[in-house]
Length: 129
Length: 129
DNA sequence: CAGCTGTAACATGACGCGTGTGACACCAAA
DNA sequence: TTTGGTGTCACACGCGTCATGTTACAGCTG
Image (cartoon, rainbow over all chains, first blue to last red; front, side, top):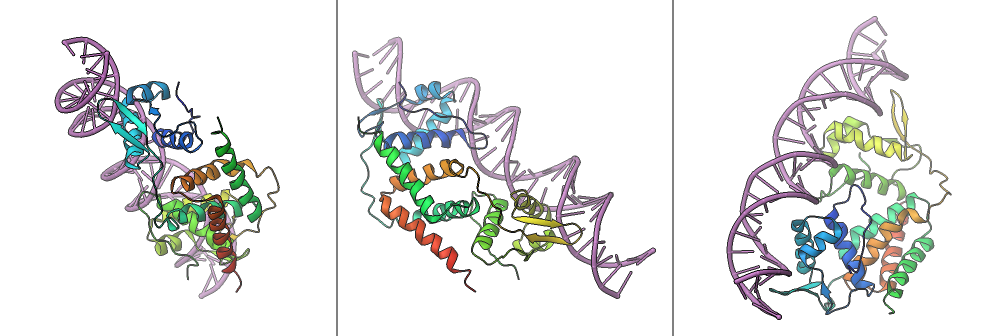
């Protein structure tokens, strides 16, 4: 039915969690370009959240170019954008944050890079259906 | 005077930013084990935050074992703990989040790992004084 | 037409965050 | 002993975010 689930974490806005789950479903191949995305009210029912919150989720995904709105019909997963711009410094802060956290728990650079690669492969593998 | 600075980012709690800046100073060698950490009120003055907020920062760093309190004297940077426990799954969520973000902006696995390595080396290099 | 879709504008309550104020126990130096 | 520094705690207050709730509108399809 809904191509993704979520395990609610305290302290993190539910809206962001749904957004993240949707992105994860897209990049892992569970949601392919052209697939119909759940409607506002259906998404709200499935995720146990209010329709208003679900609308904000779809609005954000649309604003990021991941969804395309078909007025009166619904939303559809967009084609991967050709974001070949300056994409280097966008994740600078997140990278720095993860690096510091890894240092704190005593990880090695190699171990961290390996964990990244493992997660990456894990996502790609799910889309081989 | 204060071994670290911060550039306030909107949307992120100032307290967490100070905590992060302090950790960064520690793991990059600007703050070594045994060094005196700024007092609550001094830190508040330097960071333009309230003393109460600064206290919470120190409390969190102490709770994480990065600072040691000398009652009546002040706080001192602790020795790196021997956290050789189950440290693998602790960053699972952060790794997954960064991976999805990288996928969204069109990064390659290699590029992401390279960015991690670059950031890592950049932190280690600062401590060669 | 009915029934679905997305979108918008409010109000409401809960929670986190930072500030502000005050007080306490501890220790060192004058 | 007094003074002045240290960390710690407990409130209160204002502000913003977040999710919920309600209502309404415009668009498309059958």
